[in-house]
Length: 397
Image (cartoon, rainbow, N blue to C red; front, side):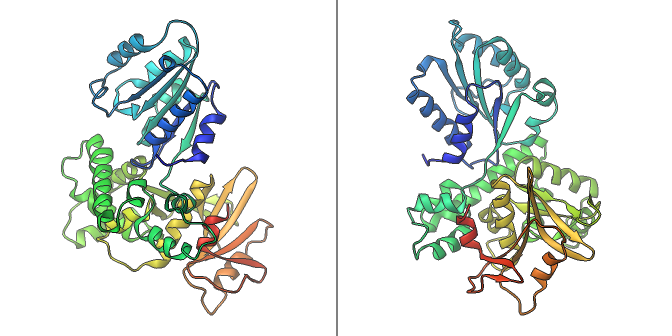
């Protein structure tokens, strides 16, 4: 098991609080491993085994527990009666209908500390939000960061191997099972992960019997990461390829892909007008390896692929990320958290003109502004704005 110290520390920080910890993220990103790491931590803290209840609802032992009643019966069997704190670690609990009421009942009636994982954003809406308003903390989880990638590969950040490692990371992404695999089978593993996410976490849960249109929408989004898109454009493109669909269907599929954590949508924000624009958004895929798989392993589109890596890394660092617009100029990312704002322009290579920095200089506030490049340049800044090589930025947190 890979150590994921940042995520594990968040669980430890919220241990023995009233909050239910909800680990969310795309399938195969490491949620189950994190839960097992937390279980090992509890055992090292001398928590008795019979006061740690670990249940993976996709495992053979628990896959028959699919209803609220069966889950309640199982808890009545497993929960200790001595009044001492019990730790519930529940993996992929959303497969159980009505799990929210049972979990809330355990929280109210037992001295418990509860951690759950899920691969669908809908688990955080509806009944869970109603029952647990303000009583849960979400811990979003992503595939390995570049820092974690190097740690797994046992490459020192100052090594000459960092640049080739970044090329591999950009090509195959950060799913743990892909990172440790030999290069000859990485694409096969990625294909399996892609099919599992699309067929199980999206199509099956939504009752989609023929996923041809769904996969076509995914292919379009993956091939256009970092591009402003709208529903009409997707429908028109698919129809030109002989695939009949409607705006209603495409909108539904876009919602499903976001709920399954396969894609994230970034909205446009008017910096001067301080409002969101009801116009096109940009979609970014959770992992660059999946993007490559979805578009048929073709190269090209380097600048937008670089944007994708930057966007996901900003999310990983806890930022809320929008696309900026000031007059007719675009700011690639506005990243905000608490009282911090960061403006980011992304350029695969620095052009001869200064458009990237000029766009940033049009913003008349004092928040930090940076340009990230896909190639290394000796120049450290232009007009006072730092120019940072992507690998350096990914390693400088």
